[in-house]
Amino acid sequence: MREQHKRGAASGARWIGAAALLVGALTAGAALAQDRATAFVNAHIIPVDGAEIASGHLIVQDGKITSVGEGAPAGDLDIIDCAGKFIMPGLVDTHSHIGGIGGADGSGPIQPGVRVRDSINVRSSGFRRALAGGLTTLNVMPGSGHLSSGQTVYLKLRHLSGVEGNDVRTIDDITIWTADDRPMGGLKMANGTNPQRDGGASGFPETRGKAAFLVRERFIRAQEYQRKLDGAKNEDGTIDESKLPERDLDLETLCEAMRGERMVHHHTHRHDDIITVLRLAEEFGFRVTLHHVSDGWVVADEIAAAGAPVSAILIDAPGGKHEAVGLRMEAAGIMEGAGVHTAMHTDDWITDSRLFLRMAALAVRGGMTRAGALASLTQVGADILDLGDRVGSLTPGKDADFIILSGDPFSTYTVVEKTYVEGRLAFDRSNERDHLHAVGGFGAENDSEPYFCCYDHLLGEGN
Image (tube, rainbow, N blue to C red; front, side):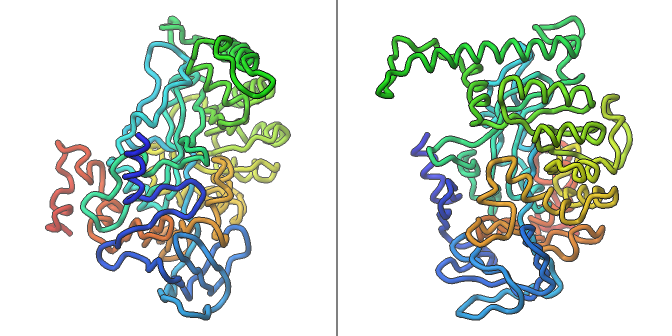
C-alpha cells in the first residue's frame, strides 16, 4: 500500500506538512510555474488572519504562500492580474458526506473501528462539485445513524483542472497524512433520535438515557483496554507482548480519542443532547466538536465554558427532524458572541458544496460578524481538524490553497471562478468540464447514468 501511495504521490501530490510534490503541467495553461514565483495582483485580498486589503497581491511559489500585502509586488515574478476579483483562502468543510461513503452497518450501535476511508469513491463527482464551491479541505464522515459510525478522514482536493477525469488514482492521493505516515481523521459519534431504533434492534437504544449508557459503558471498556496497554510497557519503553490484550479495533479507536489523538465529531441537535455530549467528554477526557447544534444558541454559555468548538449548519427552509425545530438564523451569531469557536459545514447533500459561501452569508444576516463568518468557512474549521498551521488563512508559509471570486464572497451574484490547491489550479469555471460541475444537476458527471441529464454538455454539444 505504501508503494502504491508513493506512486500516486508522484502525480497527485502527497502532503505531510512539507511542501507538496508538484510535477507535470496542467492543460490549457493552467499550471503555475513552480521554478519561479507567481503574483496575483490588483485583487481584494481576504487573508482571514488579518484585515482585508482593498487592492493587494498574493505571491505563491512551490505550492506555498510566500507573501501577502498591499499594492503591486516587486521582483522577477509571473503576474496574473485579478482586478475586480476577490481572493480568499480555500474553504474548509468540517462535515461532508461526498464520495459515496459508507460506515457502520446495522449489526450494532457503536462501531468506532470502521474506517470511512475504505469506502470512498475517489472519482465521485462530489469532489468536483466541492472544488466548484471553493472547498479545498474536507472532513468526510460516515452517517449519524449510530452512536458511533466510525472514523472520519481528512482530505485535500488535489484534482486537476481540464483533465479527462482527474489525475487522482486512489484515496491515498487526496488523504492528508500525519508526520508518522498515518491518515488523519476523527471519530464520528451521534446522539438524539438518529441512533435510536424501535424495539432495540441489534442493541440500538430506544431512549436518550440508554444511548448515553451504551456510550459510557463502551468508553469504560476502552479505559480498561488502555490500562492493559500501559501495563505491557517495560521500564525501558519496550513492549512485553505477552501482556498485551487481544487487539480490538473499536476499543483502540476510543483510546485514541481519549488520548486526544483523534477529535470526536459529534452529531447533536437538542440543548439537552448537547449537554450530554459535554458531560461525556468531560468524564472521559476526549476532545469534541459539536456538529449541527440546532439549539446551540440556547446553551451557548455552557458550550463556551466547556471550550468545545462547534460546526454549525444553517438552512433557510423549515422542515426536517423535530429535534431541529429550534434552529434559527441568529444561532451562529449568538454562539460567536458567547465566545464559542464557530465553524460552518455543508453536511453535503443537506447543503450542496457549491453553496457553502451562502451559508455564511445567512449567518451574517442573522447577526454573525463578517470576520467571524469568513473564519467559520476557513480558519476555525482548519483548527478543528488540527490543520490550522497548514491551511485556513492566506499566511506566508501555509499551503497555497485559495480561491478567486468574481465579487464579494457574501454576494448572491458572486461565483467561484478558480480554485487552487497547493499552488495548482484545481477548478476553472471557464473550462467547460469544470463549468458543468459548477452548474449541472444530479448526475452531471455520469454518476447516475440512467438520468443522462448532462451528457450533451459534457461532450461539448450543449450550452
